[in-house]
Structures are given as C-alpha cells and as structure tokens.
Image 1 (cartoon, rainbow, N blue to C red):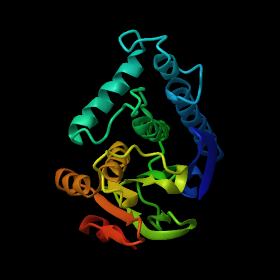
Image 2: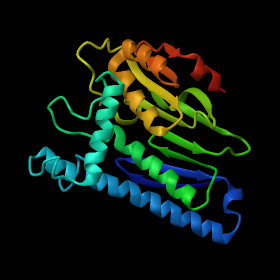
Image 3: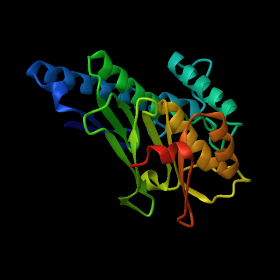
Image 4: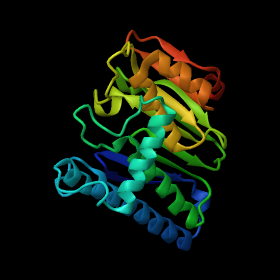
Amino acid sequence: MSVHTFTTMGTVVSVRVPDNETASSERARELDAAIAATTQEFEALNARFSLYREDSEISRIARGELTLPGASDEMRAAYAESLDWREKTNYTFTPHRPDGVLDLSGTIKAVGIQRSADALATAGFTTFLINAGGDLLSSGRPSEGWRVGVANPEDPELLTATVELSEEFCAMATSGSAERGEHIWLRPDTDNSFRQVSVVAEDIMTADVLATTIIAGGQDALDTMTERFNIGVLVVKRDGSLLGNNRFQGLMK
C-alpha cells in the first residue's frame, strides 16, 4: 500500500493507494503528480476560507473589508451550499458563528476531500482512500477492503468501532472533541449528551455536515436526520454509552 501524507487546514491528510495501482514507474510518477494536485487544492481552499489566516478572503469579510456580493464566485457558491444544508437540517447546521461571523469550515474540508478524489480519478486511479483528520472517502475496494476505525474520544489511540466502507457507503466523518477539542456550536436547547458522532454516507459532504448537525442538535437531530437521509450513525454519549443505527451496525467488522 502506497501512503502519502501532508499537513493542511490544521490537520494531517493521508492518501492510500494499493501497490497494484502504481506497479510501474510511470504510474508512480502520475500518483506523485496527483498528490501534488490534491495538496494544492487543499492549500487553495485554506488560503481563501481559513479564519485563522488574516489575509484570507473570508477574514476580510469578517472584518467588514469585503461584502459577500463583492466576494469571489467560489465564496458565494460555498455560502449558497451551506445555506442549502441549513435548510435541509432544520437550521441546526449553520454557516454563521454565534457572533454572526461567516464561517464555512463546516463544508470546506469536505470540498477539499472531494476535489482530491476527483484529481486522483482524473489521473486514472480507481482504488484509494483519503483521510483528512479522521474524515474519510474511499473509491474502489482493495483485496482486504477498506476497514476504518472510529477513534475513542477518551483515548484517540483506541478504537470505539471498526467499519468497512463500501461502494454505497464510501464516506465517513466524525464530529466531536477527539480531533479538535470542543468546537461545535450547540443549539441552546440541545441536551448536550452527545460527545462524538460518526456518520457513514454516500458522499463526504453529507457525512461531514450531518455528523456536525447531529452532535449540535442532539437526539432530535439524530432522529430527524436518520429518517431523512440514507446514513449510518454511531453516537458516543458523554456517559460512555453508544448509540448505533442498523445501517451503521451492518457495516461494523
């Protein structure tokens, strides 16, 4: 298995490709070029959308130096997509911080993951796994399958569960405190009993957004999203107990 890693958006991204996909020196060079393209995609998104960078476009919007109507097409498109998800999640997911500042980090990492997958596919690679800080997107299936773990929020070195990604459920995202600490904006009426939520879905954007939605909205959001979307969900509650729907349990190994 060929493994390439790089750091971006405050996390580590790894790309795994089976050895049979890079059997020749030419294919190995093509993979190197595709990895470079994925790195550039993430860096370009970070340069535009990171609120940690004073020179980013979204930081200029936050300071009032730039308005959304005057922003780039990419910024306006990302904002429109976040508003669409706000509607789909009954306003639990939001592109605005509690202080009103525009923050599109809830969707941009998923955009980077998908663009990376597109770059690999364009280069002719059909079997790979992208892991960006615990959010995963797979393509194809190696001989041993894509078995991935859900980190234990008490100890990230331990696993709470292991699942096998499939063609239908090819993406998984986890939201909670294991990777970045407490950073989710909870609704005022949320019961706050969910510590970590992992969602397996048909695409990385759905998995990422709904993991955030469910941990921010609690039990009501869990009930609504599992009825509305074809997803598998595993919840780690603050008392250490687990909640997993049938779709998630069916993927466990």
